[in-house]
Amino acid sequence: MKKFIKIALFWAFLLSSLSASGYVNAVKVPGNVAHLTPESKAWLSASFSEVTLYPQTALKFFDKTANEMNANNKAKKVKIKALYDGSNLAFLIQWNDATKSVQTKESTTVYGDGFAFQFPQNYSDAKELPYIGMGSAKRAVIVHLAKATEGVYEPNGEADVYHQVNKGNQNLYNEELKAYEQAVAQKMQKQYQRDFISEGFRSMTQIRDNANQAFMQMSYKDGFWRGVLSRTLKDTYLDLSKGAFPVAIAVWDGEKKNRDGLKLLSSWIPVKLVGISGGDKLIEDLTTPVSGDVANGEKLAVENCAACHHYKDQKIAPDFMAPNLSNIGGYATKEYIKESIENPNAVVVPGYNIKAHPNSAWYSLDEQGQRVSTMPAYDWMDEKSKNDLVAFFSSMKEEE
Ligand code: HEC
Image (cartoon, rainbow, N blue to C red):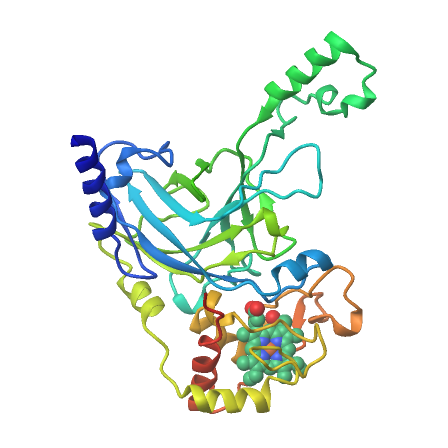
């Protein structure tokens, strides 16, 4: 009975502590949060916030099956909480996934479930946050990625090539083969974790200099994944100690062949370090709803944008003329949408796949070899029309 009451109290606590949507309060706790696991008791000090992730529709994959499996993806709600101590920050993310998918070393077509946290290197101005896809030119992001995997072989450091060779090429039998397989298993890293700095697709650079101390873990139980990211508040790449900062979250479903750009993604979500002043302007900018005439925005979109972009039931443009905007309001900020309209060259989203025909690439190259958008700038438009367009496209998200 006592145990039952304890459990009931625990759940009552969890439910009552569910706080506002789209906004995360990081709570300061005594002790060290650098190596928390999804099960750590310390999480009871913070409450869950609900965050909605949307299918990234901008990029099409060069994989017909994967595209078909994900064609009808809708929004997904996940729960996030955050803690910090004097020098470290930790996030817990919880999301439901009916199937546990784990990447194995035996197959190259089985994909693992995974999650990522992304932080902009510079977030002093909400109007100039990086493109959430993977950062953008001169607007770098730091990405922490974890994937469910049976084991990843890491020859680095040891420069051990012998154990990396396929066992079928080793001419080993019986006991010798067993010993070889054991040695390989021991050298496998059970948790797949990578830290990147990125200024856009194809510019992902893995951080290997240890200046960035991050730790990730994920565990699956009863249809839910729980993942933890802990990292230093401040390092040579990133300073998150200034009161508030934005974070973007992504989740991959291995069962649906999700990988890379095929995922569910949040917009920039403000995180407040409770007890540290600062960052109010950022929070205000990121949480103030868009004002504008949605109906007029939709009319303007048909006149100005539908010739190139697909969104909602608008599909008159040829495929791959431009990114699909059906979920742009879900994972892009209103500032980003406005910037896209006024100055498409500020962030140039890459073409849909490596086989894109040059005539339908989403960018051309200028004299300096820089990518420039093939989208015309609408800087001639009056302020009200632009705001109405932003209001309309901010409402473009396919809810659950
Ligand atoms: C001539 C074709 C064309 C027209 C017309 C056009 N766009 Fe674009 N748009 C593109 C292309 C190509 C890209 C991808 C390259 C880039 O990032 O600029 C793009 C990118 C975007 C993006 C960024 C998408 C993402 O996933 O990050 C937004 C937002 C956008 N356009 C909005 C609009 C709006 C709003 C209009 C109408 C006012 C419009 N576009 C008109 C071709 C067009």
